[in-house]
Length: 117
Image (cartoon, rainbow, N blue to C red; front, side, top):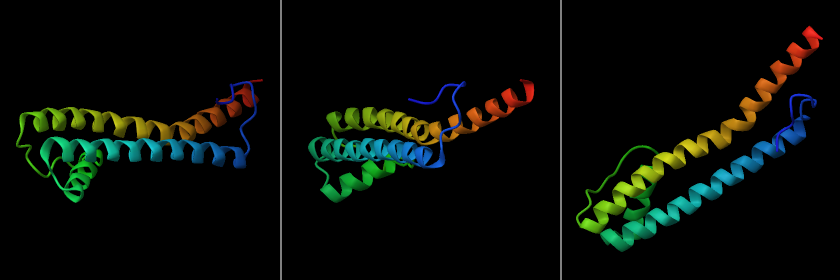
């Protein structure tokens, strides 16, 4: 997927395509997560679609819940979705930063190889 340490640095257009590909994957993950969260809050807590969206967005954004769950099933869903949202946040950050960090490390490795060899 990424170039190895023996390959030259990816050209700028290829790097932009790589970053856009990762951003597209993150967008898909976030949209799917919003759909799952909204469906769960509507089904288990009987929230309106608007309230379910706000609740889901706040959890995915790291802000925390707005409404206190009222049902046992809602409490279970809210807890599991909160754990899931934390993982989505970590995965999204890693997917977005991965290409940038790789390019930076690859660049410094190439510079060191040129100096040493």
